[in-house]
Image 1 (cartoon, helix red, strand yellow):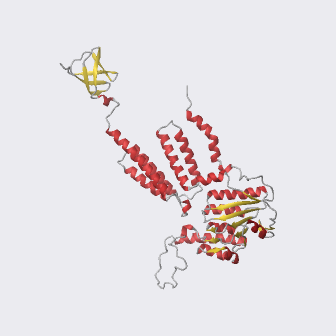
Image 2: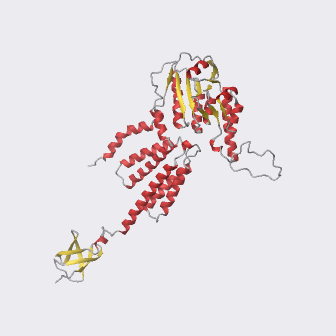
Image 3: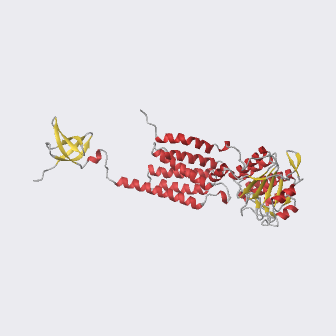
Length: 465
């Protein structure tokens, strides 16, 4: 009769929860704090770095506002920038929105830097609070000392006729800059804003305070607060899908829509440090399950962590070379435990693990880098585990053999009986056929000197007188 493994029933109980966790794409849109009625103005927030979680929250918020019949969506912006993929995802949602999307840099002291500048340019209305700023829209990958600024370039042309080799990376830098310039110029032309300054913000990293931005027609208006913003927007004309619309926001109810559980959950697992730890927990869980099959729990936990980590990595800027080095490093450290090589595999695995962890995130944004203390802590823990395993293997090899036929050599036994003239010797509770150069009788003591198949080679012990 087959018995059901206790963890299998646990797995089937957890299956609906796992399906709910991994069915993120099919979850309902953002649920409002109160029942939505037509004519509301939805307030969404872009605070901090623009990443997968914030882009998901904002794009779903815009879609939900359109479905609810909202008059407009106001995105309150205070961001230092973010990931290019997340920025473009949000801008696509803004450009496709059937409702007015108003970008508002607030409160005083806030900024719409880097990716935030692109988002503000994409909005139907661009507004700022006093004492705020925008700009510095140069792609992060090329904002390095290796890229000369116009002030750093020589004033005089080189009169040498000898051709100079191109600078390393200069072609890729030009591609990134030109792509970014074309993108923000397209947004400026679509919304009728200053495209020349937008190009300068990309090429030179220029920034503007709100007062200068209004003078240079980079934004549409300055408002001290939300009430002032709505007053100034009354009667303002915008274009949506090629049709002119006049904003009528008087009397509309302002409703704040905060991130729901899905956005908060996504924000947690898309934190590079959390995704990194989840990946390692998943790998170690699967290794433990495969080395001790039948336990079940490590395999389930490992599989869940691996799937969560993979989901996070597919929306994060992951370097596949770094990911490969991390997996290779772990594999080499595990191989050291099963095929000891006096530390060669383990040391190589540890080096590959640390290097891969450092280059795992393919971005220069500090918010999406794995913290060095986390890498060092996990590398130290992995090295400690490796040393512990190697120490156990070393001690086990130095210990005396306690099982098998070899362990019988040197043991002392007693002849219990003779069977067809063959002595049967009892050793450790077992009866063995024995061969001896001297005749043996029941009660004689013997010492094992060898094993031949299932027969013992023994020497007769002399009785003390």
